[in-house]
Length: 192
Image (cartoon, rainbow, N blue to C red; front, side):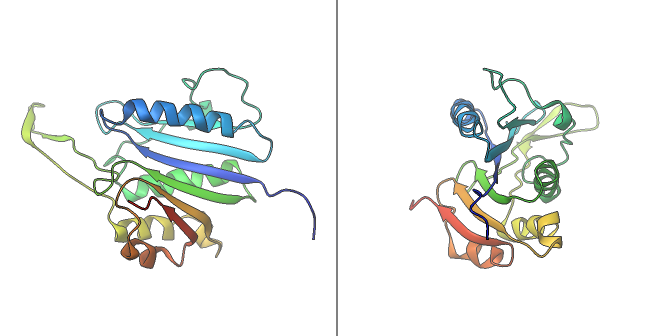
């Protein structure tokens, strides 16, 4: 047994609509400070659930930029698909982060509104390209979240994400914990 410190990768999957955008920027600043250590790398994906494409950020000991505005060049091409609530996008995000930082302990935070966590509230478009008044609401449901985690390289290697954090109100439900037991060691969430 070695006394070397564990190396961690913290993955933060952020769904930040207009109301949460400023909070997301502040969270990214905090994550950048956390990723300055040699033993912690932070990979964050921010989706404003609108026309702007999601951005990924990587903060680790090699990052000397004072700004959070510089996405890592290797992770710029992020498919929009059905946005943040698309289970394939979450799986891809986790797989990209674990490939970039292999052989570590992993922590995943889902960041967004509570019961609307990872909401995609884009208006549908008609064939002429004009918006229809009724928005399409899609959520990453507990079963979709389970499916997304089940298809990760971590799960395929018969390992688990060490910590799943729910940085959102009303997400610390027993139903979610029961869906994720095969893929997550610990779940941490707000008491709200």
